[in-house]
Structures are given as C-alpha cells and as structure tokens.
Length: 465
Image (tube, rainbow, N blue to C red; front, side, top):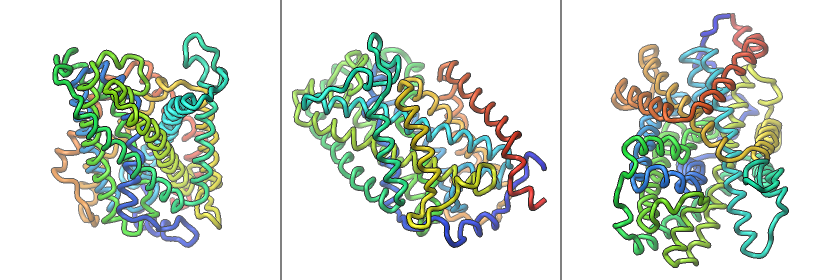
C-alpha cells in the first residue's frame, strides 16, 4: 500500500466511458463561456477597488503579472486536459503521475479552493443585490444582511441573500449540466456586453493626470496587489473538471482554457486602466462597487445601473461554474474509493451527482452566510496557487515518465514554461498574509488525517494490489 501508487491511465479512460456516467453534451463555445463565466465576477466588480488602493494606477501591471502566472499554468492544464479527458482536473492528473497521496492532498486542496470560491462570490453577490434592492426601497433587517462581524458596529448574524443564491444555483446544477450551461451562456453574453459598454463609455472620461504617479507604492505593491487580484482569474481551471462531459475533449478543452483566460485578461487590464483614469485611486478605499463608482463620478448613472445588474449576473455564473467544478472533484475522488460512494452516484434522470451537488451547496451556502468576504478571498488564492504549482510540476514529470502518451495539445517550452509557472505562483504565495498560510496548513493537515484514517484503507487501488 505505497503512498505513491499510481492509477493506470487506460483503466481511468475506460472507467470514464462506462454506461450510466456523465453525459457528453459540451462543445468549445460552451467551454469558453464556462471559463469566462467562472472568471468574470467578484474579482473585477469588487476586488479591483482594493487592488487600486494597494498598487495605484499600476493595478494594470498587477493584472498582467497575475495573468502571466495563470497563462503559464493554463498551458500545463491544457496539455493534461487534452490527453486525459477524465473528470477531476489536477486531482486526476496527479493520481496517475505523482501518486495517490499527492492526488488526495491536491483534491483536498481543490475542495477548499472551489468551495470557498463559491462562498466568497456569494458574499459579493449579496452586496450588489442588496444595493439593487435598496434602490427600489427594500432594506433587509440588519441581522440578515451579512455574516457576524462583517460590518463593524452593526449586529449582523446571517447573510440571507448569499445563502439563498447558493441554494438557487445548487438546484439548477442538480437538474443537469446542459441546463446549467445554457443559463451560464446567456448571463455571460450579457455581462461581457456590459463590461464592454463600461470600457467604451468610460474611456471618454479618463483623465491621464489620475495615472500619475503610476506606481506610488513601488514594485512590491504591484506584487501584493497581484496576489490579491489573482482571485479575479480563478475559474479557468474549472473548465478541466468538465472533461467527461465534453464531446471532443482533446480539441475543445485547450480552446476553452486558453480562450477564456485570454479574453478575460484583455477585459481586466482595460477596466483597471479606465477605472483609475476616471477616479483617483485613493477614492476607492472601502468601496465595494468600484466599477459603478467610476461611472457615477463620470456622471453616467444610467450605465452604472447596468453594471450593477451585470455584477449580479457575473457573480451568479462564477458560483455556478465553481460549484460545478467542486462536485466533479468530489465525484472523481468518490469513484476512486477515497470518499463515500454516495458522492459519485449519478441521478438516473438528471445525469448529475445529485447528492454531492446538494451537499456542496448547503455546506458552502452556510459558510457564505456566516464568514466575511476578506477571510474567504485569501484562502481561495493560496489553494489555487498551490494547485497551479502542482500541475506545472506534473507536466514535467509526465514528459519524463510517459513520453509516448498521445498529446493532442503540447505545452510549449517544457520544462521552461512549467518552471516559470511554478516560480510565479510561489512568488505570489509569498505575498499572502501569515494567517492565510496558517489556515492553509491546518486544512492540509486535516486532509492528511482523513487520508490515513479513511481514504487510504478504502482506495480501489487496494483491490488491484
């Protein structure tokens, strides 16, 4: 029972093709829109304000740094996704490359990343939704507006809107991936259109003097802001979780991963430049709706209303896709025997892991209702950066161990590109706060306990040894 025993790739591929599994219904456009749906949300509509205060107008460089780190990792993901079209993302890739204990730990890490991402975005969604309600004269009771301690001096107890949006989208996911993707596609088209509207309207009100000084707090602040706004790029890796539900995964998955990341990078840099060109960066201090604030300062309140609506839609799609990704991680780990079998049971009518979907929705819906946004965001970032680092390591190892493996897409410049991904990710991790590292270490330590107490003994690999 070696800790580093690996799964047979042919067995994995055969298991994914068994009758009664997940339905193959997704095409390349679905995957690109899924990626954009997962990426464009809280990061651009909420965290850009905090990023501007941290780095000033050089926030644009922070987005570029974060995008480069993600871009290197995306090339590594694309190679794996096209070669191993099996649900589970980096968990699955690690299982046949690096061994069971590594796969378990990264799967455990992904459960934290995807789960807390849905919770964090649900909190951001709640803020915009309550702002929209306030505009029509509806104000929720104080106790139901936010998590305990989220608003100093206010006796908040439970974020009701955050919990309710989690329940609504969980219900949608449980009904089937095709239905969920259709909803995602419609909302992605609308929110992307509104972001473009902001760019075209806002560029007319930019004052270049607001970009001076461009880097008021030095290069270190650019990296600190990059570590924060990295959250804005989280989500493209969730596309790989759809591998078993893609019609032509070897071709379509790389298109979905790289295409969605490229589109979002261009949008983010443009939005950051225009925001800080309209509003002096320090005026974003404490603002949770920076994009609409820029339009209000420009006197374009009518567009600001559209932005608020797009933010609500944008965050909804992020929750939808990230929750989808997490259920597929649970599905893969359960199918391998590392988690209870009920989590990989597919509903006979809807073709979804029904129990796992509702379990994820309820647990992280409660976390969204009870934990403040700031605590959640950094934990999501460190979990994602750890996953990106590991997938980059795995590409290098797999090139050595299985040079004969058919690869529909090959990451260029191996081992240089994966090594750069590792360096960028580790650099960004070093700028996260110490308490984030402590919380991450506690979570991973708990994962080791669960592995040795439960998962290792029940692994299906025990039956083949």
